[in-house]
Length: 218
Image (tube, rainbow, N blue to C red; front, side, top):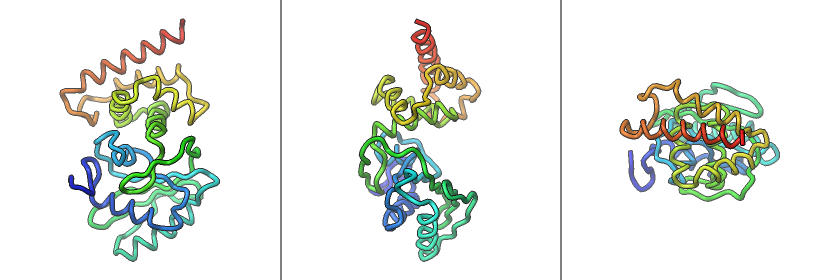
Protein backbone atom coordinates (compact mmCIF):
# COMPACT_ATOMS: atom_id res chain seq x y z
CA UNK A 1 0.00 0.00 0.00
CA UNK A 2 1.09 3.58 -0.51
CA UNK A 3 0.63 6.61 1.70
CA UNK A 4 2.76 9.27 3.36
CA UNK A 5 4.33 6.81 5.79
CA UNK A 6 4.56 3.83 3.47
CA UNK A 7 5.83 4.55 -0.03
CA UNK A 8 5.40 2.06 -2.82
CA UNK A 9 7.54 -0.95 -1.97
CA UNK A 10 7.07 -0.88 1.83
CA UNK A 11 4.05 -1.91 3.89
CA UNK A 12 2.74 -0.06 6.93
CA UNK A 13 3.87 -2.99 9.07
CA UNK A 14 7.43 -2.83 7.73
CA UNK A 15 7.55 0.87 8.56
CA UNK A 16 6.17 0.25 12.05
CA UNK A 17 8.60 -2.58 12.77
CA UNK A 18 11.60 -0.54 11.59
CA UNK A 19 10.59 2.42 13.72
CA UNK A 20 10.13 0.21 16.77
CA UNK A 21 13.59 -1.30 16.24
CA UNK A 22 15.33 2.03 15.81
CA UNK A 23 13.48 3.38 18.84
CA UNK A 24 15.43 0.94 21.01
CA UNK A 25 18.67 2.01 22.66
CA UNK A 26 20.00 -1.45 21.82
CA UNK A 27 19.72 -0.69 18.09
CA UNK A 28 22.69 1.68 18.38
CA UNK A 29 25.19 0.91 15.65
CA UNK A 30 22.71 -0.82 13.35
CA UNK A 31 21.69 0.55 9.96
CA UNK A 32 18.86 -0.41 7.64
CA UNK A 33 20.26 -2.25 4.62
CA UNK A 34 19.06 -4.29 1.66
CA UNK A 35 15.96 -3.76 -0.41
CA UNK A 36 14.04 -1.90 2.29
CA UNK A 37 16.82 0.67 2.58
CA UNK A 38 16.79 1.18 -1.19
CA UNK A 39 13.04 1.83 -1.04
CA UNK A 40 13.32 4.08 2.03
CA UNK A 41 15.85 6.22 0.16
CA UNK A 42 13.75 6.22 -3.04
CA UNK A 43 16.47 4.40 -4.99
CA UNK A 44 14.06 1.66 -6.09
CA UNK A 45 10.37 0.91 -5.63
CA UNK A 46 10.59 -2.89 -5.78
CA UNK A 47 8.45 -4.43 -3.01
CA UNK A 48 10.46 -6.34 -0.42
CA UNK A 49 9.24 -8.79 2.19
CA UNK A 50 11.94 -8.30 4.80
CA UNK A 51 13.97 -5.85 6.86
CA UNK A 52 17.75 -6.10 7.15
CA UNK A 53 19.52 -4.43 10.07
CA UNK A 54 23.33 -4.59 9.85
CA UNK A 55 26.05 -3.42 12.23
CA UNK A 56 29.82 -3.53 12.13
CA UNK A 57 31.49 -6.14 14.39
CA UNK A 58 32.57 -3.45 16.84
CA UNK A 59 29.48 -1.25 16.75
CA UNK A 60 26.51 -3.46 17.63
CA UNK A 61 25.39 -6.72 19.24
CA UNK A 62 22.99 -9.06 17.45
CA UNK A 63 22.06 -10.85 20.66
CA UNK A 64 21.40 -7.68 22.66
CA UNK A 65 19.40 -6.09 19.83
CA UNK A 66 17.44 -9.30 19.28
CA UNK A 67 16.43 -9.62 22.92
CA UNK A 68 15.36 -5.98 23.17
CA UNK A 69 13.39 -6.16 19.93
CA UNK A 70 11.61 -9.37 20.94
CA UNK A 71 10.52 -7.72 24.19
CA UNK A 72 9.27 -4.62 22.37
CA UNK A 73 7.44 -6.76 19.81
CA UNK A 74 5.71 -8.83 22.46
CA UNK A 75 4.60 -5.66 24.26
CA UNK A 76 2.80 -4.72 21.04
CA UNK A 77 1.11 -8.10 20.73
CA UNK A 78 3.30 -9.30 17.87
CA UNK A 79 4.60 -12.85 17.73
CA UNK A 80 8.27 -13.46 17.01
CA UNK A 81 9.76 -16.76 15.86
CA UNK A 82 13.49 -17.37 15.59
CA UNK A 83 14.34 -19.10 12.32
CA UNK A 84 18.12 -18.79 12.67
CA UNK A 85 19.84 -17.69 15.83
CA UNK A 86 23.51 -16.90 16.34
CA UNK A 87 25.82 -14.23 17.69
CA UNK A 88 26.57 -12.74 14.26
CA UNK A 89 23.29 -13.44 12.45
CA UNK A 90 19.70 -13.85 13.55
CA UNK A 91 16.59 -14.30 11.41
CA UNK A 92 13.19 -13.59 12.93
CA UNK A 93 9.69 -13.97 11.54
CA UNK A 94 7.56 -11.19 13.01
CA UNK A 95 3.78 -11.41 12.80
CA UNK A 96 1.30 -8.69 13.67
CA UNK A 97 -1.04 -6.94 11.25
CA UNK A 98 1.17 -8.58 8.62
CA UNK A 99 4.13 -10.95 8.63
CA UNK A 100 7.72 -10.27 7.63
CA UNK A 101 11.29 -11.50 8.01
CA UNK A 102 13.75 -9.47 10.08
CA UNK A 103 17.47 -10.14 9.77
CA UNK A 104 19.97 -8.85 12.34
CA UNK A 105 23.58 -9.29 11.31
CA UNK A 106 27.15 -8.20 11.80
CA UNK A 107 28.69 -7.18 8.51
CA UNK A 108 31.44 -5.04 7.02
CA UNK A 109 31.35 -1.66 8.81
CA UNK A 110 30.01 1.27 6.79
CA UNK A 111 32.68 3.03 4.76
CA UNK A 112 30.74 6.28 4.66
CA UNK A 113 28.62 8.22 7.19
CA UNK A 114 25.04 6.89 7.54
CA UNK A 115 22.12 8.69 5.94
CA UNK A 116 18.81 9.42 7.68
CA UNK A 117 15.52 8.16 6.29
CA UNK A 118 11.90 8.41 7.41
CA UNK A 119 12.13 5.01 9.14
CA UNK A 120 15.66 5.18 10.50
CA UNK A 121 19.33 5.40 9.54
CA UNK A 122 20.56 3.60 6.43
CA UNK A 123 23.90 3.18 4.79
CA UNK A 124 25.00 6.11 2.63
CA UNK A 125 23.10 6.10 -0.67
CA UNK A 126 26.14 5.40 -2.83
CA UNK A 127 27.28 2.73 -0.40
CA UNK A 128 23.83 1.12 -0.61
CA UNK A 129 24.31 1.01 -4.37
CA UNK A 130 27.73 -0.57 -3.94
CA UNK A 131 26.45 -3.15 -1.48
CA UNK A 132 23.63 -4.11 -3.82
CA UNK A 133 26.22 -4.53 -6.58
CA UNK A 134 28.07 -6.87 -4.23
CA UNK A 135 24.85 -8.84 -3.75
CA UNK A 136 24.74 -9.32 -7.52
CA UNK A 137 28.41 -10.37 -7.39
CA UNK A 138 27.84 -12.84 -4.51
CA UNK A 139 24.46 -14.46 -5.25
CA UNK A 140 22.93 -12.90 -8.39
CA UNK A 141 19.27 -13.38 -7.45
CA UNK A 142 16.55 -12.07 -9.75
CA UNK A 143 15.90 -9.11 -7.44
CA UNK A 144 19.59 -8.17 -7.51
CA UNK A 145 19.53 -7.78 -11.29
CA UNK A 146 16.47 -5.53 -11.22
CA UNK A 147 17.81 -3.42 -8.35
CA UNK A 148 21.22 -2.93 -9.95
CA UNK A 149 19.55 -2.07 -13.25
CA UNK A 150 17.61 0.70 -11.48
CA UNK A 151 20.72 1.91 -9.65
CA UNK A 152 22.76 2.13 -12.85
CA UNK A 153 20.20 4.57 -14.24
CA UNK A 154 20.94 6.89 -11.32
CA UNK A 155 24.65 6.41 -10.64
CA UNK A 156 26.19 4.81 -13.72
CA UNK A 157 28.18 1.61 -13.97
CA UNK A 158 31.57 2.98 -12.95
CA UNK A 159 30.37 4.38 -9.64
CA UNK A 160 28.64 1.12 -8.71
CA UNK A 161 31.80 -0.84 -9.43
CA UNK A 162 33.94 1.62 -7.46
CA UNK A 163 31.66 1.58 -4.42
CA UNK A 164 31.47 -2.23 -4.46
CA UNK A 165 35.26 -2.42 -4.43
CA UNK A 166 35.37 0.04 -1.51
CA UNK A 167 33.17 -2.24 0.61
CA UNK A 168 34.77 -5.55 -0.39
CA UNK A 169 38.41 -5.76 -1.43
CA UNK A 170 37.64 -9.21 -2.85
CA UNK A 171 35.35 -7.76 -5.51
CA UNK A 172 36.60 -9.27 -8.78
CA UNK A 173 35.59 -7.85 -12.16
CA UNK A 174 36.08 -11.14 -14.00
CA UNK A 175 33.85 -13.01 -11.57
CA UNK A 176 31.33 -10.18 -11.68
CA UNK A 177 31.17 -10.45 -15.47
CA UNK A 178 30.49 -14.17 -15.11
CA UNK A 179 27.71 -13.50 -12.61
CA UNK A 180 26.06 -11.07 -15.04
CA UNK A 181 25.86 -13.95 -17.49
CA UNK A 182 23.77 -16.01 -15.06
CA UNK A 183 20.73 -13.83 -15.73
CA UNK A 184 19.71 -16.41 -18.34
CA UNK A 185 18.73 -18.87 -15.61
CA UNK A 186 15.67 -16.76 -14.77
CA UNK A 187 12.42 -16.83 -16.72
CA UNK A 188 10.95 -13.44 -17.64
CA UNK A 189 8.22 -13.84 -15.03
CA UNK A 190 10.78 -14.34 -12.27
CA UNK A 191 12.27 -10.89 -12.75
CA UNK A 192 10.53 -8.27 -10.55
CA UNK A 193 10.27 -5.64 -13.27
CA UNK A 194 7.40 -4.65 -15.58
CA UNK A 195 7.17 -7.12 -18.46
CA UNK A 196 7.75 -4.46 -21.06
CA UNK A 197 11.22 -3.76 -19.67
CA UNK A 198 12.52 -7.32 -19.41
CA UNK A 199 14.06 -7.29 -22.88
CA UNK A 200 15.99 -4.07 -22.25
CA UNK A 201 17.19 -5.40 -18.88
CA UNK A 202 18.50 -8.59 -20.49
CA UNK A 203 20.17 -6.64 -23.27
CA UNK A 204 21.80 -4.26 -20.79
CA UNK A 205 23.41 -6.98 -18.69
CA UNK A 206 24.52 -8.97 -21.74
CA UNK A 207 26.25 -5.86 -23.08
CA UNK A 208 27.79 -5.01 -19.72
CA UNK A 209 29.23 -8.53 -19.37
CA UNK A 210 30.85 -8.27 -22.81
CA UNK A 211 32.15 -4.79 -21.99
CA UNK A 212 33.80 -6.01 -18.79
CA UNK A 213 35.36 -9.04 -20.47
CA UNK A 214 36.73 -6.86 -23.26
CA UNK A 215 38.15 -4.33 -20.80
CA UNK A 216 39.90 -7.07 -18.83
CA UNK A 217 41.40 -8.52 -22.00
CA UNK A 218 42.78 -5.21 -23.25
